[in-house]
Figure 1 (cartoon, rainbow, N blue to C red):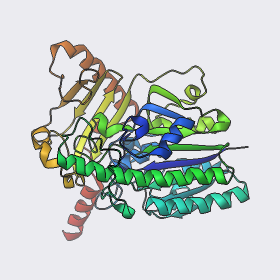
Figure 2: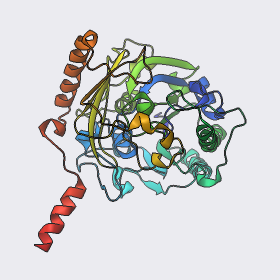
Figure 3: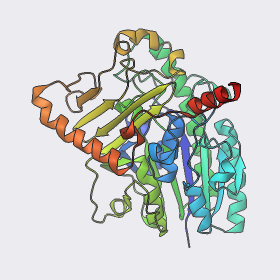
Length: 428
């Protein structure tokens, strides 16, 4: 019998959870999922902002190829190309009942993505109640389902849905940020949002068990990108692209608290899902299935993952390649040393870091991830790292060519540009 799938995503979390070492974060439900399922310790999104990241996660194709090179809401209005196929659409074609409960941030018309049922975004506790209703009905019908659960938390403002600050276990401030009173206060607020997120997931996990669905339901959890903090969200540094990735499916042996250190990318999730379900993987996906890794079979691990950014608050084209040891970031346009997304500028931490984020970004950035895990010392001009820079440059260009990155052909206009041109034509 085909398994059910519950695919849970959340905003702006990165891997800031107790199961990834943040001991002051109150997230017991996600810890339980990690301890009873499997956890990927080196998982990365493909873009450090919402819509592009989700587009790759749910199509298996990088954002510069699938059309979502920026946010999908106004004034940006990016969208998937008409021929792109979302996971929900493919599973629907293979006999699954498909549903979206909560956030998706990928299309103005989510029904077009392949869902039979869509219920709009709500606070996490309300989404969890909707999930319980859905699972109750699904258990009675007995048909395999794909349920996508989109949680707004932990997006700013952190009091969304009534969440309150949580410093009961102390406060964790990552080392790439100043451990100042402003940071302590803000991270207590963030931890409150994560607690609300985790409580909702706890209810979902209890519902799965209550309706006797746990054994043959594949549960996946991940975040779209890193925390909404300076040098994280909107950047290609590890705090911007590193993400939690947890899953459990007892029937297929995805259990027991195993942890994997292999590099995996969000673009790999869709092909892994298809292979695990025995569904033909579309030939144009960019990702590589790691199903054999999860099954304890021979697996060719990635030597590198790739990430990108084209548009967010403005035109900010950059691409990156990351191996276990080094990261190369190519910046294709003049801009500030560290881009800070609009919502991150509301952080009280932002003004404390102006000396670290102002200035002009260099064309290339190269970091030794062992000696400099927070990516503060740019080695692109170092003679000792010349060969590393050459090797990573080659890898990055090969990836851009193989995925038909339009940036190789020159600057990329946005839908906003096209709207301006159309307006001029109408007025001339």
